Image (cartoon, rainbow, N blue to C red; front, side):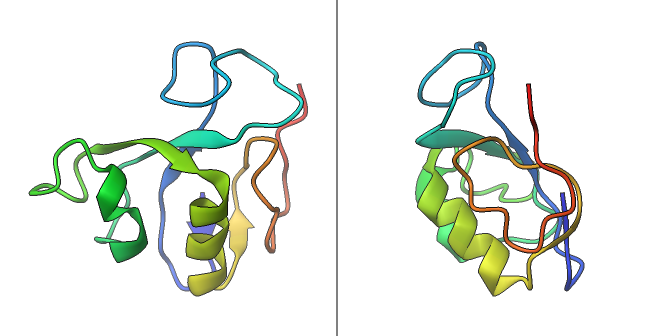
Length: 97
């Protein structure tokens, strides 16, 4: 997803991902997988698999509230999708399985 200030990151939730629940098409996710932000983001660092490589790593089981806080901090989404459970701050597209 792309935020208003140019910050980008991947946010996913699916049966094989680092998310809760670990199923496809859940009604609501509590934690999601974040990956490969284009800039280091302090709000995500507690969840980094490789904290010494903040733009080249996956962030596992990130609470949806943390993702929402990141979106707010970066001005909301201008392009992309969010899994159910993540507040659609400025979002144009929401995953709807």
